[in-house]
Each structure stands twice: as structure tokens, then as C-alpha cells.
Image (cartoon, rainbow, N blue to C red):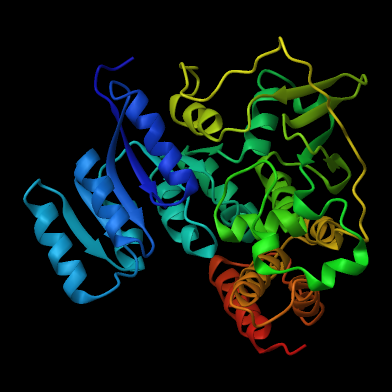
Length: 389
């Protein structure tokens, strides 16, 4: 092992995954160093991170104002950090700057192009941005093979599957089983879902996440996206993809083998564990996450998914099977629908209605180019924004 710390390009540094990645870097300064920090709009938070970690480059996609940007740029220049702005700067840094590992934690389609540039350079890419594989599954995985890049999952469910498959033969895998907490509305009467408020949907029972992922967890769109991601990440068929409700969120996912054995990955609900493993792989290091105390009784509960309550997951299975541009359309329509719900433009159940409606209007291109995927993404966003309820 080299005595030089591995340099990290952390995209989405001010979000939930980003801040926990910085916790891991803090805990292991001898192993990791933040060289690039990139964020969306939180300039003050990015500035504070840059002052602490002293990266060579900090990037803000959308600064609040030119004056705020200029003041921040001057402050950071004194410590040797260059401040850049714009999504183009994020893509350019991923393509041109020096780093060892990319952590792709930008939520949504905005994280796609930096991840692609990192893959083209043969980097290890820690994927917390599930949308990259949902949109461009075969394109991204083929690029990774061509450039000898590593796609390492950071999502807790995919990290769990990845660990369960370590050293196993793909021929012996019967199916993978992703667990879902069921979110805040697992037992809410169906008749009350049409009245769900923004505040209610943001209260996840077990995970602390940003608003987009919290809403997706309440609808199970997050699990639908994860099913599609697993399809490409682990080269699985539709029949090998399953999900189950597990309210305790202690079992992160499972793999069932052809002999009936089931291997489960368990652990605390702390994202620093899969984040750290993605950075340190194949080594395991002490982690700042809390330990499980087996001196106290624990109950595990598993329930089949109620597709009437969570129709998004059923739709996700269909998209995983369809492939092509279906994933990009599914993801784009959901991003717009969630944003409209958070802004009070549509009601909670209209998130699903939006995605379903846009998909019904789309003719799937089964073998698209990257440009055609991006065209489908733009089309779906326009369609989702225009829908009236």
C-alpha cells in the first residue's frame, strides 16, 4: 500500500452522502485526501468544507450571486484552493484534473456526465448517484469494461449485494433481494395518501437523507430506481430482481443462491460504512459508524410489497425489463414530479401519475446512443412539467 493518501474528487460534497464522505476522510487522513469538492448551490457550506480540507479545486454549480462567488473565491485563493462555477466546470474537472477516486454523490441526472468522464479515465467511481446507471446502464458498464474502470456501489443496498457476491459465481445466483423500509406511509390507510403533505413525506423513519431521496423513499421510487440500477450493475435479468419491505433497515439486502442458501448483509443504518468500503476496497478499515449491540433484543420483520400502495416499484420492474431509453424517461419524469410536489404544484399521488403518464407517451429506443439518452431525458422533463392534474 502506498504511503501517499488517495485523492478524492467528491461531487455533491454538501449533501448527505457528501458530508458523510468527509467524515470518512476525516477519520482516515493517512488514507484519503479531498482534492476536488463540488456542490450544487450551497456556497457557504462549500466554503467551510474547503477551508477545513484545503482541496486544490472547489466547484459550485450555481452560485447565489456573482458578489458572493467573488468573495468566496478570494478567501479560498489565499489557501491555494481555486473556486470554479458551473456544471461545465464539474464535467471538465472530472475529465482533466488529477484524482484517484470519484465519489459521485450529485443527486439526479446532473451527476451523469462527471461520472462518465471519470469512467473514461479508468478511475474508480463510487456510485451514490443511482441515476447514472438507471439512465445509461449498458453504456456506462460497457465504458467501464473498455477503460478498466471500477464501478463501486455506495448505495447501502447495492453495496450489500456487492459484498454478498464477493467470491461467488454469477451462475449460482438465483436472485437478489433489495430491502425497503416502507417509508413513513407503510401502514397509512390508502384513502389518506391523496392528502399527504410535503412535511409528512419528508419524515423518513430510519434514514437521514436529502429531500429528493426522502420523497422517493416514501413512494418507493427509490427502490424502483435501485432495481433498475441493480439490473445493470450486476448483469441480472428481471426474474432475478426482487424487493421486500423490512422496516428496521438492518438487513440492507440479500442474495439467494440456486441451492436455497440466502446470504444477507446486515449493519447499522449509517451510510459511512458503504462509503468507506467504496474508498478503501478491498481493505476494510475501522469506521466512525456506531456498533451494533447484540446484548439487546432485536426483531426483524419482512413483508411482501403491496403494489397498490407502492405502484412505483411495479413500474420499476417493467422499466428494468424494457431497458433502452425507458430508464432515462422514468428517472427524468420522477425528478420533475418530485420537484413539482415539493414546490406545491402537484399532489403526492400525482408523482406516480406523472411518471406513468410520461412513460405511456414514450416509444422506447432499445439501443440508444448517449446522445439519444440525453434527448429522451430532456423530452421527458418537458412532458412531466407540462402535465396537468
